[in-house]
Image 1 (cartoon, helix red, strand yellow):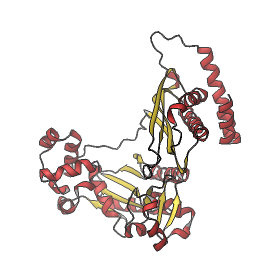
Image 2: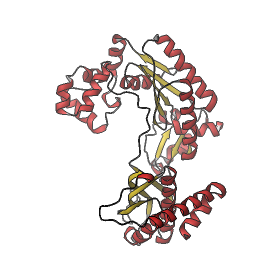
Image 3: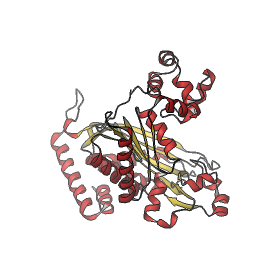
Image 4: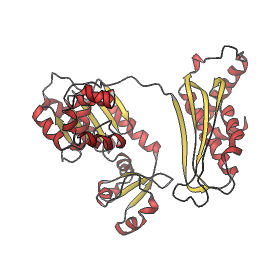
Length: 394
């Protein structure tokens, strides 16, 4: 048995935790680029769509008094970690699936009433200790648990279980194909041509035929909809293959010096996170994007990439590549709305891999590592601004 704990309108709920005056009023959370990332139920009822540009809903914001809040990812990550800590304290196997969602393994031998009681208790504790409301779906597979949690969000109790075959078929008969876990927009648009419009119609198909026409993942989804578990709870942390730091700007950047300063700061942040994970990167990329809603000054979509030999987490090395690339990333007269850096080919720093014909200067590598550890220590003691200044000056 599986349960999925899904925080309701998570970003909005976090904003309401720190500002209770937002309770009961329509709220949207938008990134610096002016894109709506989260909506309260009140805002959804007014027709505010997900990923809606703020400039397109200004009339609704004024007419209905919608509260617009900027993203605060540090706050969201903190509350997400608190919720995960609570779940780990109540259940032996927990998979932190995303920032607002976790799967929990439940014993098959326990009566469903007892499992519901445990989940209700966990839900109440999360609400009491963090202030974030969550919904819980319980079923024999992860996919059915995801179906159950969507229905739980519409119930007063916030908990829904799908166990018996009759109840499962009743639910799946009217459940839209596009709302099934793992089925995206493109796939949901193709399936009706094969006579598949609901979850039940998909569940009744032959998995072998579906695997041949589409994919093995969709075949597994059919098995899951029929109560056969194919996706287990994964409690082991997945090693990251890449790392990205990005920013969106409320006021678009039109000067290369300002853009260079922001990219330096992003590369410093990426280097710090990489060292925190005790990893090094084999390559790096930098990108900039223009404003896709205002293309009269030209739309930028530029990117530069490089590889490092040997792999590194040294911030001066990262910022030097940014400085060398700025001439290819900025077009005079254009506006930059979003920028970022990404590191790839990550590996543990203790297992740096060198090329067959490379002769790395081990003494210099160790010296750079000591310098970065010293700067990280200064950051922990004096703050991020002091760190960024020192890293750029090194």
